[in-house]
Image 1 (cartoon, rainbow, N blue to C red):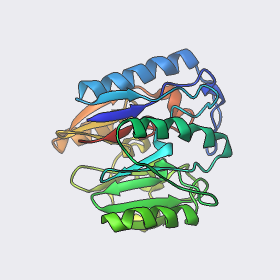
Image 2: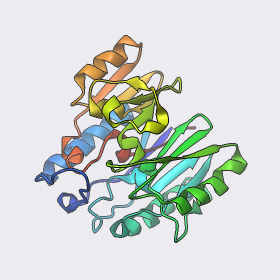
Image 3: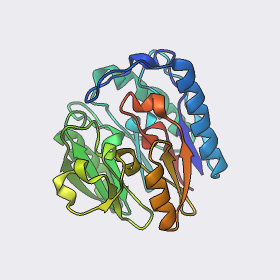
Length: 250
């Protein structure tokens, strides 16, 4: 099992902030937190594949936005922020080296991987500031012949769909009720906003941010094993645990 990651740029403090107030970023602390994140992946059995640096791209550490993988097919996205377009080439080179024959989202389509939530063969795609309808159309054309059902979900007032909902191994949609898009109706409610962000590490292990202890306790009560990481510097840039890796299961 491999996990693609990319080290933070020295200019990470200049990353885009859209829906929250900008706060100072400690680049050294961000790098230390990234190392802790990678260590947590490796402790759960994932081999970290470090993609070539994108030091001139402040948001390059948020590698999830550049790649969607479904049933062995790698889709190189076209990020909705122009400053992030340069991030995709290194990611494409990495997946090619791993044996993928990637497909690309092309202009005028835009697609951020953070807007893509896969639940078995259902692929929810948030549309809003970063992902447009043409991007969803192109992703649907790629994935539906492979067996996926691609569903567009309008997203407002948050950066990405996965800023507000993710899913557990049993397919339950997880969210913090005040932020969940109306599309989803009832979800498995968690008590903290960042608790809605989970990365499925396998064997009932869930990667969670350190600032949602009540959610970690809640998931423990459901029989899951939380793996906790401090990503506070990245959260200042509207990042979450899903943003910092792309998992490539065997």
